Length: 147
Image 1: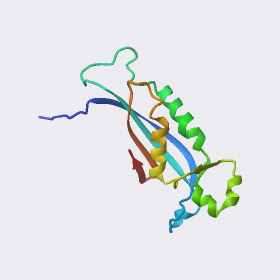
Image 2: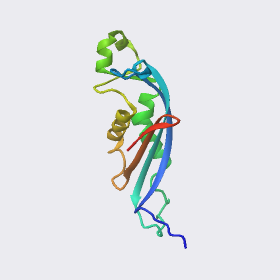
Image 3: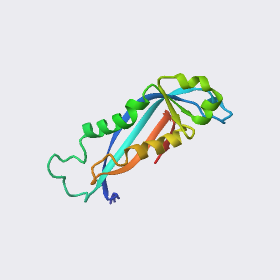
């Protein structure tokens, strides 16, 4: 007999893609230099649910168009083809402050710090009944940070 275990949340995920460059000050590897990634962001939201009860109305947790609008405005549009650099990096490379697409960070823009930033930027953008359940940010096809 098969037994299925479900959490008490009904969830949906939308995937976003954007191109962003960064550099990590104080790192001794290649990432100390400005370089870019094709980031892939998975955003999962949910609501408490009994798995045998259907959702009323449209049957949506959230309209994917609404989720897309929230993430595009908060993350994708500002970061797509942008350069994320720390104040410390810029202290050593002051000429880069002239870049039009520059976003200056107080901390190093590692994938770990980027996902924390994303969480903080979007956590209060959802209707109150919707919970941000999971974020996964791929920096490369086989490397990611997850919250």
